[in-house]
Image (cartoon, rainbow, N blue to C red; front, side, top):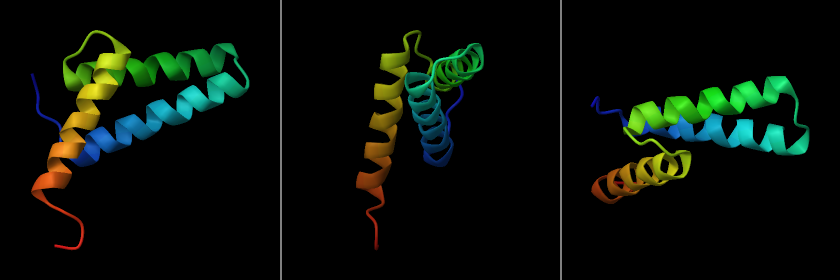
Length: 73
């Protein structure tokens, strides 16, 4: 499995969150595809099969990175 940088994972999480919000506000075939693509990319990047697991794994990586490199240091 490839290891993605915290920056990449942060971007994927943001894309997924944006797609989910857009889809929840006004579901269309386009928002469905966007959400599916964002979820797939996040799953591939984290090596997880389920979107919820992928989100949790990405957040874990970001939390670990923040602990190693606190803001302002």
